[in-house]
Image 1 (cartoon, chains in turn yellow, orange):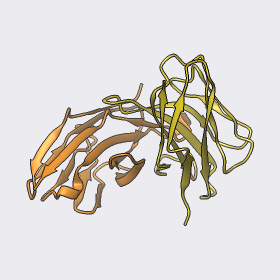
Image 2 (cartoon, helix red, strand yellow; image 1 turned 90 degrees about the horizontal axis):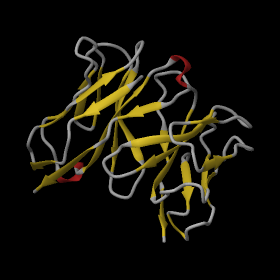
Image 3 (spheres, rainbow over the protein chains, first blue to last red; image 1 turned 120 degrees about the horizontal axis):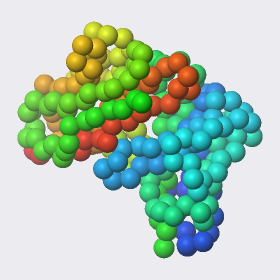
Image 4 (spheres, chains in turn purple, cyan; image 1 turned 30 degrees about the vertical axis):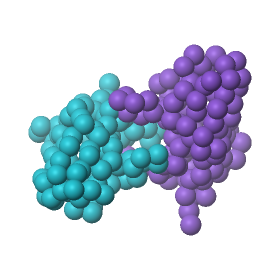
Length: 114
Length: 114
């Protein structure tokens, strides 16, 4: 079955630590996205990548970093510079960037800072 | 800029009631419009979409019509079930140089009681 996997499902971090969230897709999609979800605020875009070795900042990129070394993988690092990292993180992908293409979402990672 | 506004929730209904969740948007050009659903602890799933004015998207008894004159894309279902309890997100894809990015509304929590 094709889809997007995210790991881990739950992640706990101590203040001052960097953590990396995994996102893998086997849909052969070119574009991938990271969103942050907070209660009552919908989804906000962190970073996105249209092709391998290229990515751009979204609306709330500060304190986050990404890489896109392989088409199927788009890991997100939450750094110690992110002041309020506790949230639900969602990865998504799409076949192309034309406007009628839907995005497919992974199951999410819930990050909690202790 | 682009934006999506959804009716505030939570919405609480009895089984078999009629559902409407309002969604209005602001966008340059001619966006595509989407409704996504999120069940507790999961990622988002596409519920339906419409890519041009007067298109009606439908799926699993849910419907929404793209109304350009009122910039709206309201979600409706004639008879809700307990299993429809979830968070519903309206989203737009502006096309052009948006690189596949979606703009989301804040989400509407729906609870259906037996």
